[in-house]
Image 1 (cartoon, rainbow, N blue to C red):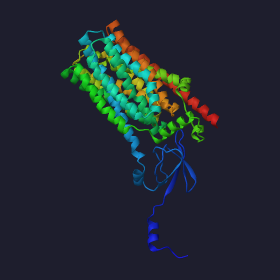
Image 2: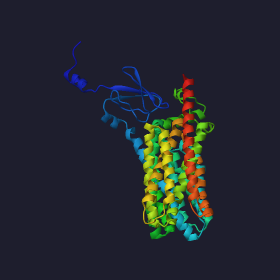
Image 3: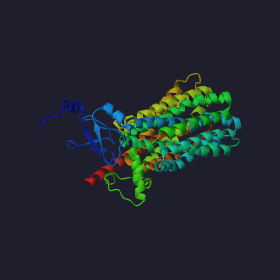
Image 4: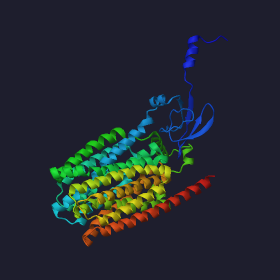
Length: 501
């Protein structure tokens, strides 16, 4: 047999040696990846992609099996567009979170102005914020189900229109029930449609439950960053009046949220496959793939029957619900009561927001060091901060208020995403949007009571001291409940593992 021509041998030398990765259907915690040439199995994170020998992949998977040639990281970036798209989706989710919760937290700055303008009691005025939090929570399971069932970008776009329009309509309010209906219901529903429930329904599938601490930390930090807008809102109120400020803020919110939602927020290929599979099962078709045998797909109803989920719900109600919203809703008013200028109080509130964002971002450390240590540290930090409010008495010095803002912000910031990540560890799946929605509902029940109770206790006693003592008690209770829930979760997982063996 004659040797091949010289140009053919040259092409063979230049041809890269390829390693074929075969990606099977994903299951909880990763996908099975086999090397076609050697037949050696190894475990890699969720996803498919091009990898060097020994390198793990971390890209969104295409269920059903796929052979992808790999020979260089540079080629992988060109041939697999999903490599960086999950980070684009995360950036879009972060931006929407900042705007969404900035809109809801406008109450803290508008609250004193509305009380002075209409002469209402603090408890009666704070009720509009409590109604908003309750409406937000009641609609959260619906928002999660909508994001699971329909295209998330359309859900987010509709939410942007509703929340922006609702804030603009607040400028027309002339009585308490107007605020209760417009801000308390309409704006709250819009916030729920663009809130953490539909966002995490999308993002949890892009990154998987193994990195839920990181994702919740980044998204949660958007909530903290949203509080930094307080001086801007105060400037708008001082310069244009609270009615014009509501119109400007509402229009800006819609102009930002709608384009980001439509252009950036997409389902991962894995989530789309799960949605298609669920639709096929509803139509009478059964998928015989290993995914059904390897991972139980929790529903919200099943999760509610478990003791672990019940403990998580109560812990969230105490910490992220009551405690956080009392601090957010009454912090500015408390500082003004002790003699601080409204702009100084707004700046302290912004410092609290920065610390909250830092705490949110710090929750990604729970992926490395565990959920329990981070959650306990957060509760203890916030509890310590509440003691400092008893010694705030000199309006000429902002040292104590700033120290309170740093400790309370970081503590409340790190505990929330850590709790959400712990829930995702246990109940991640294709129905996670609905499960997260129920979690938000219970958090919102505590949040709805918090601002109203803080205002009512102030009207009753003439100070916020009793409210702050109650916040401390609930923070410590949340820490105990969280430890108990994680132990229940670890025991349940161990039992399931033993049954599988």
